[in-house]
Image (cartoon, rainbow over all chains, first blue to last red; front, side, top):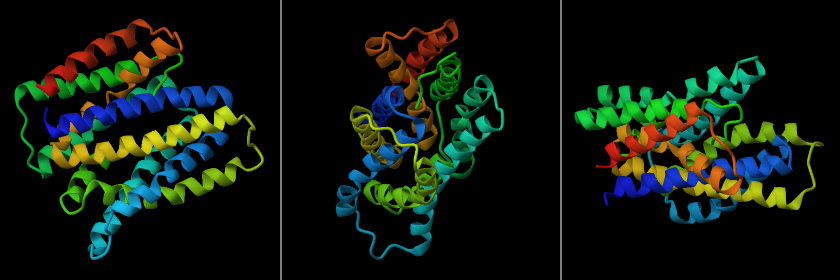
Amino acid sequence: MADWLLYSLASLVGYGAVGLLQKLTTNRISGESSLVFYSLGYLVLFPLFWSRAELNGLAPGILAMGVMLGLLARSGEWFLFKSFEGGGKVSIVVPLTYTYPLITLLLAVALLGERLSPMKWAGILLAIVAAVLMSRGDDPVRQ
Amino acid sequence: MFGFLSKLVSRDIGPWQMQVLFTFGALPLIVPAWLRARGKMDHDRVGWALGALTGALAALANLALFYAIRSGDVSIVTPFTALSPLVTFLLGRLILKETMNRTQNLGVACAVVAIVLLAV
């Protein structure tokens, strides 16, 4: 099995289980409390990551871009939360957010020069349709 | 943007370094959430443990994502990993006995086909 596929499957299963655990957590404690303990759990593994990450000698630009990844990801979640607070309908907002791979796809093809076979194109488009369809429910269990 | 930038950064640094820097970037937005939670904390220890387990698992899933982005085309990895609700649905069905509506069932079928198309 190709490395990318193995790691992608690990991430897919991991995030899938996170979705279920989030549901189980918020069945017992408030959203605010769950966020606090989610963050603590996230930080518990930080010493392990730190011990294996050599940051000395990295260019400031690379460091800044790495930090920006975290900022971007959390900002995306914050904007999603704000759109709900602003009266956004779950049935519209959530499926719309699941089209995000389209942005990555366009940037990767246009700027990184990634080339895809027709079968991969079909798989990508079907994956986006699938993510949008799965997010449409009365009580979606999602990441 | 996240997937695209991750791919760019992964050309210069490894997944462990990316995960550390990612956490640094995420921290500024975690602090306000913590401040908001003050005075509203529940006291269910199982809930606390589940919340912490969720965070730890998310960190590992994120690390795996960085490995995947580094070793594959981000144009394929991103839509592939966006199918994680499929696993959530299946676990929800197995463990919580949740039911899915017709649209979601169609989404699950599309996801399975998409995974096969992307993996071959």
